[in-house]
Length: 153
Image (cartoon, rainbow, N blue to C red; front, side, top):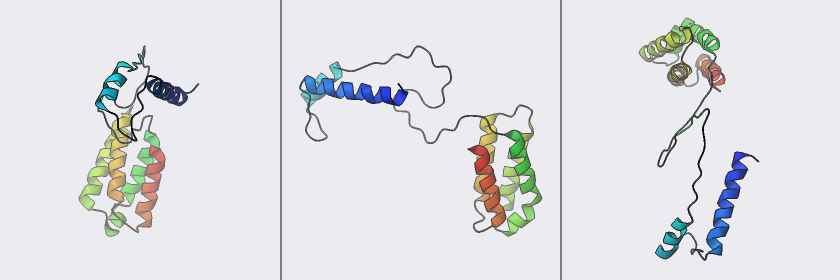
């Protein structure tokens, strides 16, 4: 059984148990008494160990997209070199020169490190992609943005 199926089953079992003990609610609300009784039926799951974990753990943690995994440092370095050769054209197409040079430098430093830190390299490439995105309508910038997106997926 998959984790998703296990969660669905646990929620369904909990809902059935609530109904069995008379906690029915009305539309999307419950009386104070029903809320108190439902707390008595709380379910706790204990996980023995977690080998690898990416994301937030605990109450109230909210996050956007979480990307995990490796980033092809060689592929990133190749894209960075291609973009660096085209700085003048990209600036002419509307990319901010200072932002582009800073993003290229940061990405290049991360990509050229031996044993590059995947999180830092990913962040640097995301920043570079963002800078390039400012050249709306530039075929060159669009191609670079697409290449970076493929590397990061």
